[in-house]
Length: 231
Image 1: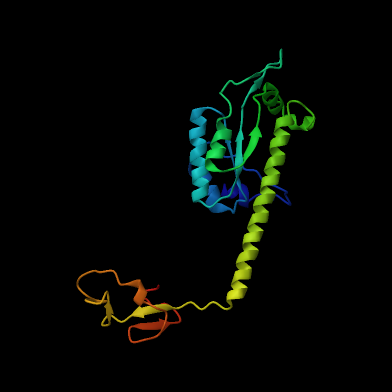
Image 2 (image 1 turned 90 degrees about the vertical axis):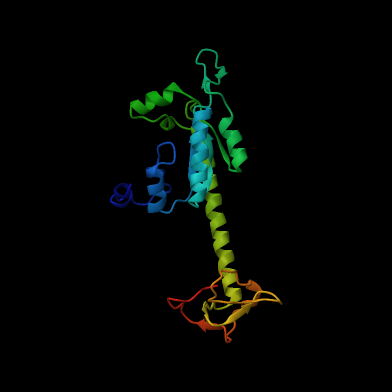
């Protein structure tokens, strides 16, 4: 992955799409840790086995703080070439229901179309036939939804960044310091007992008595010394 992304001169791209294997293996984790991702699109068939992997992928991306652009249901249905009737070979609607459960966007359904396989094998992807082609229509609709979601994610990040910058400006300069505990100082736990910071028995120090001010027990430091306790 590092060679693929770092040793290739890609030029100016509108979007780069990296197709990952199913599940939450090392390839997906390496990609997340190597480059900043704009968003993740989770692809699943309607079958229960595929949905299990999709759920794990959503949870993994959320733990890795990657925005989820949405979920798409691949091979959602098959259109009979003789009667044009839609047949749900792998069931249908499972990915959409899963998207609702996780609170993520549903990006659409893509049909199981033999023409997609044939055009791919011949080196002429079906999308080159244009968005009016019945074989490419669902793919174009899905792609538009992905682009719209990426725009939403970028706008949301910009708003959050502007909000953080505005709050930082209003707060003024930030001064960070640590407080070093005097091991011989006593901290009252309550009205009837006192506990030394270096006492033999381990007790939780009452947070209410600790304040960021200089005093006989709390000494401010501009930089945390090696033996300091930072609150």
